[in-house]
Length: 603
Image 1 (cartoon, rainbow, N blue to C red):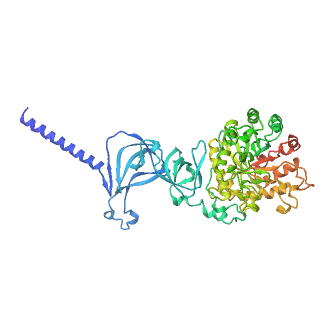
Image 2: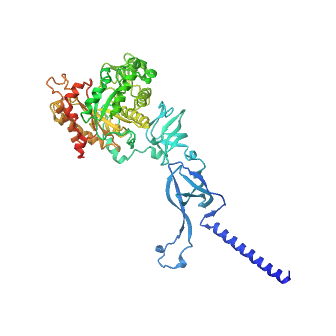
Image 3: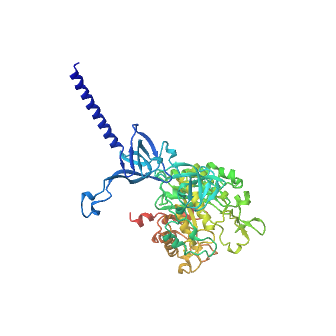
């Protein structure tokens, strides 16, 4: 090769080298920008999956945007020379749930002394703080402590619901682990440590800061209402109760009728073994539900495993065999009825026989206090809560109840005169109203996991808005937590002169309308009120109330129901007839053949 050709090739080679140097310099400038403390670097690494992590439900994500510090509207001279140099900044675009899977690589940006990593969400490019990306979804929950927003039970484990402690409003708890991250990034259940107690709590009762935890929900509304309520009879201070919203679920595989028309059936063998006759009767009416006893005081329906383990006396007094009871409930369900299991809660003489230490104590005798012929385990006692809930859960699993109705969810009535004589064994120094609301919360959490609703029976007196009741039932607090609240405004339980009626028991429409109007007003005092489904009197006026009282036939029953519906309580009714006499029900059949919900809703 000639020298001329060699020189020519050398010049070409030098040009190629210069071009490569210029290209590399350009790329270096392109990928090593430094605008006001923002630095972009890249590494060639394949895209991989990671998960967003946070100490709260959501994670903020950002995009890189150009920014001009001196916008034209702030530059009246409109002189380009006075415009500052264009810069790039990270701008928060939205927050998305932690646990979200994203695409990422090792491309990072340093902005304001913090490293952000490139991610891709729904095909769009974003950046997220580098420490908020983890390789495993189970590592998405970063908080090491949480605060209690609503006082709640600490459970040994979620499956058994055994209570090991109480976490109180504003308390800081150490987070040990968690179970189940929900779609919105919130935690379903935390494992926590409170002092020396380790257990589980539901995440819905927690906040991430103490400041948020100690607040009351919409205090300007609900504190204003409940602070005016007097504690005249020692039931408790309404202002201390919890009014954070409780979601009222609709279970797709267990739909509750909008209006429930229910007949009550006791668990006597004559009733349970005659179930076909009740079904046949109901088919000729608009009755769509039955309330059947699981346990009444000293009347356990069947030999439950819970009785065998926790109350042998109840077990030994079971009225029906397991098979006959199951047969009756199965027939009701197969006939298409919505079936509700009723449990007397804090009135259980047989349980006290087995566990006298749980009973309300008579300090004069150092024995369980006998109240109107029955013994009551204290509503403060968590072992009693566990026993009652265990029975409810067993009944749901064994027989398929659609709903559990808790009756006697209260302390004994008319006990102010003996308050110095009895020891209620108040383990956690709670008001009566607090204990009752917290039991309902506890039962609701567990039964909702089984996709079953809960209803709570309350005295008719609870619609009075000026005081908390002596036995601990406060309508707004109960309605806020339960799925259904069932008042018991039996006309012959009201004294003469109630609502201006000389004999309210002989005026069922007026009585129910007046009472129902008060109940409707009380519903406005809760952010998430329950459905109202009311117990109605299906028995004749008791002779000791009024020997000249009326008999309750179809007309009287219909008037009760219409009084409720006219007052706005359209959730339905339940007949209270303690002996469940079918002939009595037959005498009232015309009242049960009306579809009140359809009529009042003009469907």
